[in-house]
Image 1 (spheres, rainbow, N blue to C red):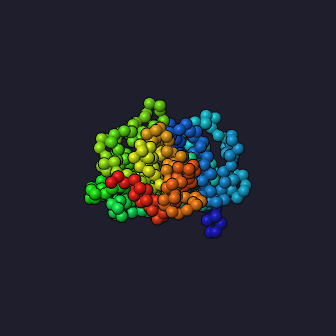
Image 2 (cartoon, rainbow, N blue to C red):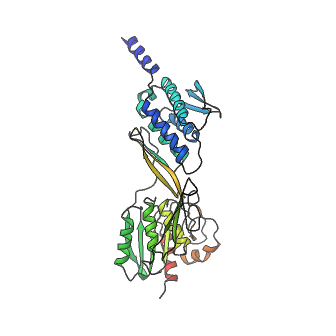
Image 3 (cartoon, helix red, strand yellow):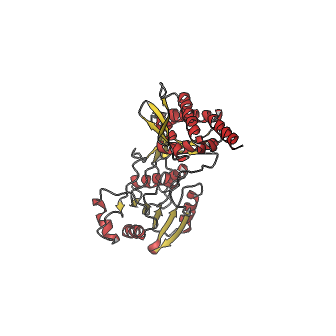
Length: 373
């Protein structure tokens, strides 16, 4: 009986399945990267990291790349070597090659055989993050080992009035309620003399909300522009007339976790000389993702456009540099002295600031110095 069970198991390993649906998903994802990613991209920039992610399911599996061929190893022993497609931009050929290597890996790995339905979802989830940190593959099935998420969940909105009529507002996220919550908060305190808008830790969210919030504080002018893959795909967003604060001073707090549409908000008001930015250099995510549902009910959010500030500066990869830096080797923690030296600061590193009181103290002091009586 034991011999029969063993033979049956071996026959199952030899019959490692190749699912037509998985091949279709791979081909479509590869096509999307080739055709719709905002920058020129080669399919192998996604396919190779995805195959190397097989080790996330079974740590004994490795995929080597010598430039022209991909080699699969199990326990340090070569299992198969496959040449890359002659046409390196052939999505169908890359999908077929990916499945060949998956099948070879399954023959050497009971773990991969057991999780056959999860393989494509898992490797694409890891591969897309290696390809572009701002893009995401959302599997329909729960990953056995999903990429670790970072960041803290923050309260979406809070407000309070500080000394000398200064309104402090914290936006923990950019969602469909953000603009109205902020507008309502400002209207509740018509006597405010200045605003501290705290975007530290804000991961962004709805781009439209960031545009609308920036527009609340501008009396016309450009808020931002979005550029897709094609040269003629530029879309410009303008602010309406009228400033909800009546030109009262604004300080925006940012840190290394301020990202995406939150960066657009801070950068736009900074460039339009409407706000002074305090804190640490922001994350640098200014991009837009297109969400596509795949044949296996998974989804791919792929970067298909970049966001630019009014000056034409790109946010992605660069981030927003604060006017007043509160990180690094500070000579003093006196807010007034930090403000005095800010023009001499050329470098400001990315750092998570959380709820640092120093940032708020510097912002409050700056506003007190610039409030119009």
